[in-house]
Length: 461
Image (cartoon, rainbow, N blue to C red):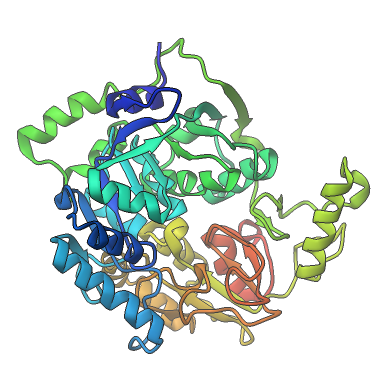
């Protein structure tokens, strides 16, 4: 009896190093402009080529400008270097202006490059996103990027297995982002350390593919190696028309195999948690890591309620940085910025959810609000559906695709001391800019904050 993770992992093990890691074959290697230059240079120094370039894909996303031309010298150098490296090593490159350009973890699925049963790696921690398709997907370091380029393999120690079950029905208006923030708040940022997570239960099965991607995307915020969800009809239907997905008889044969990718009934996990979907409510973070989250109906924890001095010191440091107090309610706290986008929530369903909230309204005068679609395909679809017009009427700026304000690696930064309600995945100190203060939330909560200029429950307006 095996878990889906064990089935995929074992199928990709080429060799076992005595008393060491296993040699894992990699089906799809995704690269971008930030973590690949040193790897390419390493290949040159060793006078070797990319072993299987057709299994490598390179979108430009982290340093791309979402408004205007590339002006930052470092960004320009990294983008040009990626283009030149891909040309030299015969790698598929989706650069600025390419119809398939976008955030790497949005581009892979929407093009059908992400497939069930595959092993997928990228020099980016949120590669876990692709696990929504029943794939083993995880982030790697630059030296490992070079290893995969050179051999299409990776030395890896097999993680332990953890299953997280979410059963029952979500309350009306509660999203996948609320679900994953709730789970992380319960388990903590170290709750998944050493494990690869399988998400299961009827509440997970009822999620759309895009919502499943949001869940798997933030697996890394629990410290886990990655997260996956067994593929099903929703998965197959999503992939069927995608540009690089198998076609015709080949697709049907793949589906026959993909249907076997599920955990056996009596398989044993190293650890298991269960949650009730009905207990989940609109969530928001108040601190400086994704585990510092609470329901909008709750208040910030008190020092007295924490078990040890380390936790108390951590809470104090976070609240000092955020300029919040213990027992504060997050409701009605004034905000300055709103960012809707990133590999967590930059898909068309997220654009639709935000548009539904802002339709017929204007953003608050003191708020700067950015909508950043995760890819050119998402932006084109949002335009065809009239969503961009809705945002424009609300005085909300819709930018070009890119990682944008998820991280302070491009021009889209939140100023020091300002509060940003963000649909991204991390709220570390300075993540969105030096001194910036990030509140993680769903697109609905973020959109409502843009309209009202403060934190409100979108399900009560």
